[in-house]
Length: 178
Image 1 (cartoon, rainbow, N blue to C red):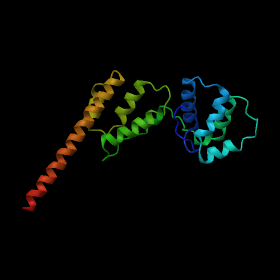
Image 2: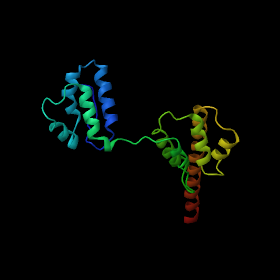
Image 3: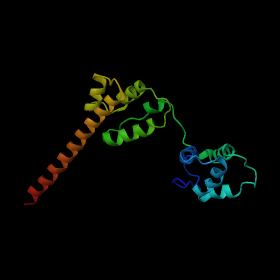
Image 4: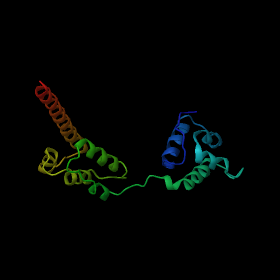
């Protein structure tokens, strides 16, 4: 059986089903075996749920998958719409790295996200006065690769600046100590 992380009922059931189904389909495993093998990927509350299914109540994989999703629906990751990106704002002292991680995490939860919306949201939400803010507003990106190139460029510059500042602080401290 293909490796599949155990599901305990606290994560998105759709993601677990997709991983399990993909692995099984890759090996052309029939429905009956998928139904029996599924319990091996469960633990905790999810495994207890499986054990309490009424015997012979499931006749095919699609039925088991639907029952599983219905039972663990509250753990499903809620998809967002594009307006969620406009609510992510870089804090006054927040690093670009931290801001971009939050922005990207939220972006991944949005289905069919238009790249123009991504560009507009980032240009509006990155801290005003920063080099990236200036760059995005002066010349909007034409495609995602352009946006990623700019973000990486300014991330490296920010990290280099932090390293230089830390190095100067250490060398200044050594001078004061002598």
